[in-house]
Amino acid sequence: KNVPYINFIHLNFKNPALKDIRVRKAINMAIDREGIAKEIYRGTGRAEYGMLSPGTDAYDPDFKSYSYDPEGAKKLLAEAGVKDLKLVFEVPQYGTGEIVETWIQRDLKKVGIDVELRKFEWVTYLGKWAGGMPEDVAMNEIGWGMSTPSWIDIVSRCDSAPPGGINSGYYCNPEVDKLLDQAILERDPAKAKEIYQKANRIIMDDAAFVPLVDDLQPIITAPSVKGFVNPPEDWYDLSIVSVE
Image (cartoon, rainbow, N blue to C red; front, side):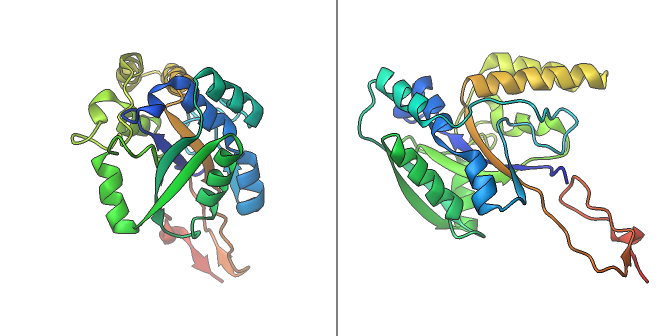
């Protein structure tokens, strides 16, 4: 199924170390997304490289931003003059028991980044995430998206930064905002798709986020269940379902 959301990391543009694009790119290159999809999700998830979720018509399955390249990540960190970097990663205690987060922690350790996982109960965490990261926190995460590509406005626009919105890492690129404005007004779906994909490329060129994986949300039904559709949404239409 093409799901409406992806799991991704906000990178904090207020954090002193993450103001350097080379550090943000290095973080993206250091994380083995394909490994997470294969070893943790066991085929029920897919590695993601952009901020357009698979459930949208603007999704490009061939788009690749940063492939797994720990040696390349080390070179970028060296160019940035970064040594013994310590970063705080705020995470929710939710679902998988931080298996993905400890994987990320291990991957970043391999390139010389020491990550402290700060865990919070889910409701407490949501408040912290929505309120925006203080500068001493480098990263936080969320699983989110919609079946319309305009959802990236919510997490990436300049005016979506807290307290007015939930752009938790305070990413701001006026060129992206301009493209998102154009996309909303564009009536031709094919042209709108191109604009969203261009905005997505710039967002990832800026290494503003770390897309990780999506969850394919497999559903098992008994042979007697007929008419069930697993849509690219977070809801199901049970009015069309019957049991023989």
